[in-house]
Image (cartoon, rainbow over all chains, first blue to last red; front, top):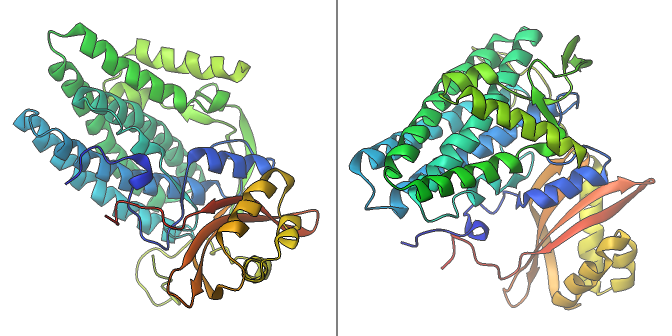
Length: 266
Length: 128
């Protein structure tokens, strides 16, 4: 079986639309929308966000499976952790498919981008866990925390609890990533630096050009959710508490927040 | 995910919002594109395309020789807000299908092509 499957070789059923993040960005800009991601004030926010997460869970499942396969010489405990993650992500995929149905959507309503899979294109397991478990799963903590708060404001326990259950796993995935990033690079500061750089690149990729702030800094604006009008975030937020639970340091979180606000100036 | 239809008698939480139904213009535009491609009407095709993508549309039309294709099907559809991605397969008598993807959307009252990808002959992890 082939190792290091390239981004454009990601297998999907034919009745599925897979496009690059760049193309999705153009599609949004052509309609006068903020690039990259639906913002909380958009009518489609909940559907598109849950869809993006669902596709992300599928790719996270595939990525953990590929990491297991691509590095057969990695420690046995590492492989076991990756196998467990595959199982976690497959359950998450099912949960989000159900949530999509719940919000009047379905898997395939929106295009899938290959952005998470593109983070598997590195041949060092330490970089993989730094980028995917710490970078992307850290981002998942942010995104999930925001959806939980939105669900609380909507008074919707189904979304609130379902996402909370998944968040509990993601926190463990980040911790697992931190553990293996350090273990695999023990006594090799250069390798650790490379892994941290890889994660930093991924963090920067998801800064969304200033569309992210800390939860406290998020400007509130009125939004209609179904029959209700609520006040909610105008930006995508960085969930400090969830990230602290996941084992990120205060310094790492502050750096992320600063980087997000810096990119607004571009 | 299949459309589960009438669910009022199903236990458990019910959907809190309705599915978005694509407007009829989406299918009509797809039909128009495939008709023009089949007939080799390149200038009409480019007229249906936003300026920045006209070269790509000409290239797509070149890849699909006029008169070769007799049937078509939309094999996938996905939307970004009000724009729709369509994956379209055109069938030929010799069995070699032509597969491409477009993004269409309404601008100034007209449905136009905003993005084009020729997917014919591309290999994926499904194919060897």
